[in-house]
Length: 432
Ligand SMILES: C[S@@+](CC[C@H](N)C(=O)[O-])C[C@H]1O[C@@H](n2cnc3c(N)ncnc32)[C@H](O)[C@@H]1O
Image 1 (cartoon, rainbow, N blue to C red):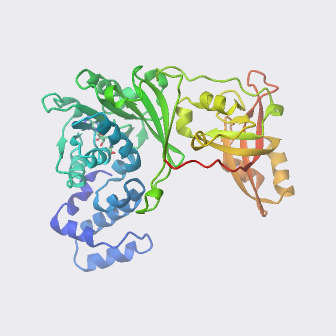
Image 2: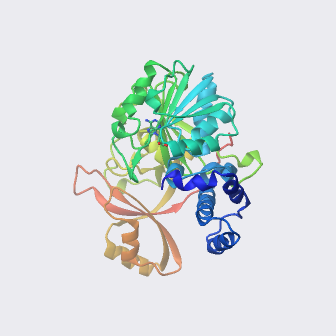
């Protein structure tokens, strides 16, 4: 859907209609629509307002209470940076003493909002005319933001007095993700080349980016929110205060609206102390020899730490080893201390079973299992297929980790296994 359907709302009557709508409720939307049309509002304006109200409700997960004053398209909302992450982007610019940032490919203005919120001047550049119009509305409350509808690579940054760049290239086309960074818009290579003009450059990229494609002298930070990996940020020059290397930023889910500072989302950073060039391949440790070598616990590093190549670092700190070759489950006899706990999820091992659906079905029947929490890595089964095959219908609950255990170089010893686990007490993490 493009933004042209929003045109009826960008009129005084449309704006007033949107402002007067009740909160979006799927169960009443048809009757609300009918009532508004009967009251004389044009059908296309009613449709646009109801769509916008639905998008605003969805956008609360990214923008909290600000969503209720913003305009979206489904695509632009999908691509927008959530505020809890863009606030971290913006803090880098503020700490670097930046004055005037160009946000190249600003979309509906998610990052520009956070930059402007810290009092920085922002030139928000967007090549799509309709999206630029939405950014203009969303950023209207910040007088220090200028929205420019232009090709980001055509803007004369020096002439405009820009001293830092943030770019978030579009990584989707016609609803499909584009894997090759040189096919993004603008292409990653073209964006990184802007360092010749502006040293303070930050680029938001796909978390799955190949480490080999990263600039050797940048700091690259992978971010997760509530356990979901959302991005990697390439930070160059003064924006990389921690120096070249890789790190993981683990953010808790933003809580529901609250004025209590103790409810603020927590942010933890884990840096690989041995990595000073983000393009170097991560270290892979030798796995356990076989199932018999499993320890008391199984640990799963946060996805941001996995993408940042920190699995070996975490394993060393836990005195643990990967359960299988290149498998990001670790096993050992120690729990993480409070400084490492935010970056791993730990379970206590109860039993280990072969990954054999017939035997697992028997277990489900014999143990009266009705609910199963399933995790998997490195084995060609899906949780849905396993659930369908073993048919849980009893009263008990179990958590299973389905994975490869042992050394894959030795076909006899690398087995598909189900590790039956139970939750274990996480150490208390001091509030930062
Ligand atoms: C991933 S979105 C940006 C999202 C934004 N950071 C936010 O939080 O709302 C990328 C945007 O870049 C725009 N774009 C793509 N190529 C561009 C170019 N050459 N110049 C300016 N904008 C461009 C796209 O239209 C899209 O809106």
